[in-house]
Amino acid sequence: MNYLKNIALSVAALAFAVFTVTPAQAAPAVKNLILATTTSTQDSGLLDELIPVFQKDTGYFVKTISVGSGQAMKMGEKGEADVLLVHSPDAEKKFVAEGYGINRKIVMHNDFVIVGPPSDPAKIKSAKTSKDALVKIAAANALFLSRGDNSGTHALEKKLWKAAGLDAEGQKWYQQTGLGMGQTLSVAAEKNGYALTDRGTYLSLKKNLGLDILVEGDASLLNVYHVIEVNPAKWPKVNSAGAKAFSDFMVSKKAQAIIKTFGVKKYGSPLFFPDAGKKED
Amino acid sequence: MDLILEGIVTAFQLLWALDPEVLGITWLSLKVSGLATIISVVIGISVGMIVALTRFPGKKFVVSVVNTGMGLPPVVVGLFVTVFLWRNGPFGFLDILYTPTAIIIAQAVIATPIVMGISIAALQNLPSKLRLQILSLGATRLQMVGILVREARLPLMAAVMAGFGGVISEVGASIMVGGNIKGYSRVLTTATVMETGKGEFAVAFALSIILLMLVFFVNYLFTLIQQRERPR
Image (cartoon, rainbow over all chains, first blue to last red):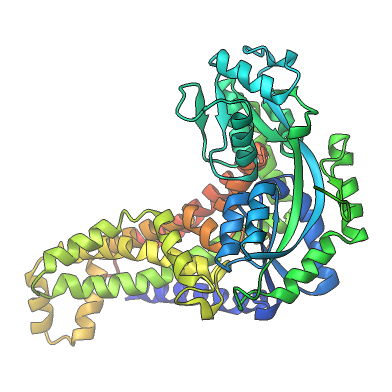
C-alpha cells in the first residue's frame, strides 16, 4: 500500500498548495470591473500601460476581455460587460441609440492602412484613395485577407467594399481568417496577400511581417476609439460606478498623456493620438 | 531556424532571470490544471469504478456517453460554462466568470470523462473472478476497492496522465472562461495564443517550451509512481 500512501500524500500536498494560494487573488466583488475591448488595444500593449495606473488610482480590479468590437458590444447588450473601449462608430451609435450604452466619449484615434506584399501585384500603390485600391485588388483578383469577425476593422472594411460598389464576399480571391488583427496580418504575410489593418497593430508587428503600407492617409481610413458605459438601467448588475470611473479616467489628462507618448520609444512614432473633448460629427 | 533558436534562448533567459510574470503564469497553469485533475480523478475513478463493477440496464449506453465525453472539445465546454456563469445566467450569482476558479471548473469538466473512460476500461480489464477471490478471503468492500485500484495501477495512472495532459494543453476553454487577464487568469496556453497574436513569436515559442518542460516534469513524477516495483 506504500505507493497509495504516496499518491495520497502528493495529492494532499498539491491540494493544500492550491487552496492556500487561491484566496490571495480574490478581490471584493464590487471592485471587479469588466472591460470589453478590441484586440488592437491589447495587442499593441496600450492597456498594459493604462490599466495599472487606473487600478492604482481607484482601487478597482479591471478584467480586460479582449475581443472584436462586435463581440464587445454584444457583451454590453447582454449586460456581461461594464464598460467598452471600441472602434466601430456606426455600430456604436446604434448601440447607444438602442439604450444599451450611455456616455459615449471619444478617447483617441489612429488610422487604418492597406498593407500588402512589397511586389504589389495589383499595383495599388498608385491608387489615390482606398476605394481605388480595392477596385484594383478586385480587378487583379489579388488575394485579400479579411478579419471576417465583426470587429471594428472588419466593419470598416465592409463599408469600404460597399463604397467601392463591390461585393467581395464569396469571391475566390477574398478570404476570411476569423482571427485577430495580428494573426490576420501573419496570414497575409505568409500568403502574400493584402489586408486592412489599424496602424498600431501593423507597427507593433512590422519586424516579423515583410508587408508594406501601400495605401494610407485617406479620410475614410480614420480609426476612432470611444469609451461607452453599459446602461445600468437595462442591466442592474452592471458596475456603473466603476464604469463611470474608467470612462472618466480614459479622458483624463493623465491617461491622455500616456496615450500620447505610448509607443514613441519603441516604434519611433506614437501608435494612438489622444482626442478627449474633441467635437465630432 | 532563427526563430526556433531565439525561442529556446528566450525560454532559458526567462527562466534563468526568474521573470516574475512568467513564473506566475507557469505556477497558475500548474495550480489550475492540477486542481482540475484532482477533481476529475476523484469523480472519474469513483464513478468509473461504480460503472465498471456493477451491472445495470443501459450500461453500454452510459459507457458510450462517457467515451464520447473523452473527445469533448474544450471550446464547447468553454462556451457552455461561460453561458452558465454569465452574470445574468443561471449561476451568475457566484460571480466567478473570468476567474481562475472558472478555468478549474471548465477543465474539470473536460478531464473527468477522460479519467472516467480510461478507468472503466482499466477496471473492466481485471479478471472477473478476482473480486470474488478477494471477498472470499475476508476483505471488506473498502479493502477490495483498494486492492482493485492497486491491481489496475498502471492504466489508472495512465488515466490521470491523460486527464492532466488534456487540460494543461487546452486553450479554448481557458481563454473563454478565464479571459486571459494579465496577472490573474493568464495561463501558459492563453499567453502563448496572445503572444502569437502580438507577433512576439520568440516569446510564444519560449512559453511553449516552458509548457512542455512543465508537462514533462509532472508526467515524470506520475510515471515514477506508476512504474514503481510492486511491494512484495
